[in-house]
Length: 483
Image (cartoon, rainbow, N blue to C red; front, side, top):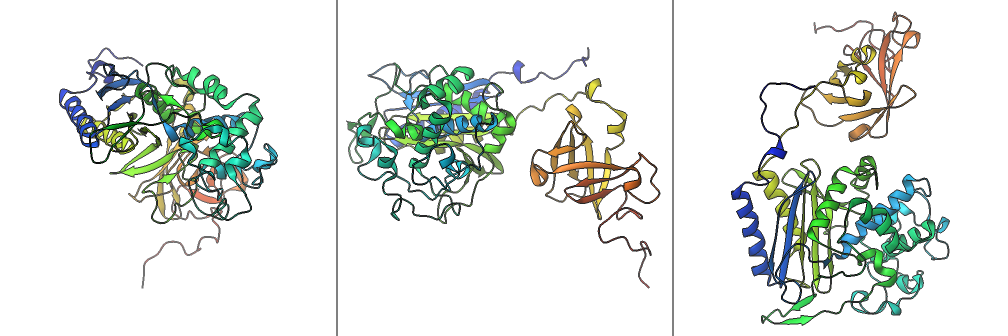
């Protein structure tokens, strides 16, 4: 529907960011680079597909003038790419997240752990590989999975019971990368290129550095001098931390994590990745972990993303999916600046300084308007608790409490069989059915709506409606006072 009436400009008509916000971003990034004593620091922020601001402080590559096209190593943000590859295999029906690893990758010695447990770091595996520090030593020292896992019978290789607790494991993501290669039949790096970076247009994200790229440095803690860090190929450990990227590419990847992209992974599957997989260890991170992504709650906002580090580099990517804001920060120093924390600050700064402009309200398309669906909308009661059922685009519904209470709100998608499935909230995955005719309330005409059945809960038009098939029945005396 269009209107000739004057309307407020939408966000595409507005300046990318207000001058005050741009200065605040520059101030924050400059302070982080100076206080952190890092040779260079790049940052960018994006909203709904548009880069709003980017900036680099310092010299990133052999004295090169700083710009956002310089690659940095992104470390464990690589794990999110690996997780996306695994979710694609699941969506194609080539594996199930509940499958034991042994079904697709036999002979590891830890084959009873599931794909889901590996994705969420609940497989009970050690955090690091046996032997010398894998991030600074040649991959030839770890030619096989046995060299990555060590003696799987030893307590040091499996410090936790399977499935009981989140314990971050780099070897676990090596197993997932090998799983991708076994099922897909191509190398992990080729799968990343074909299935993620090319479809999303991440032209500056690669397994090998592409000029211009930053040199990784260690900064002396007590003097302003540098030491070059080695750049080693990670070999089998590549799915845990190999990738190089830029802040612009990472912001584009962040936009994908917010909404999905049917060329890579649906929005529904991306949302599934954001669901916490297990409780975290006591005294551990302040957030939770989903499937290949960290999840934080900051000032009432839910952020999803990942941090990363390798000798000479630190990285952070965080996304506020509800507000459509993604931010990335990259630095070429082993320590000094918490790039992940900076990316969180950038997201929150932009989202709070310039709240998202609400989408224009428009009526439903004619194809989504059906009288039998309209008749289902309005107030329903679960016992005495009032809920409102609202019709959505695509014949879907939303269910929300009307008394100001919290919990049990969900959106539902229509199924071909005439039922609806919950998409989020308490009723995610649950089935909503409309019960009609003789199987419903006493005296309800054949074909007329009796009640809603939602995961065995009965929703009626009146609180404890007389004659409705409410479990336990309804007192025949009806509603009454005392005395």
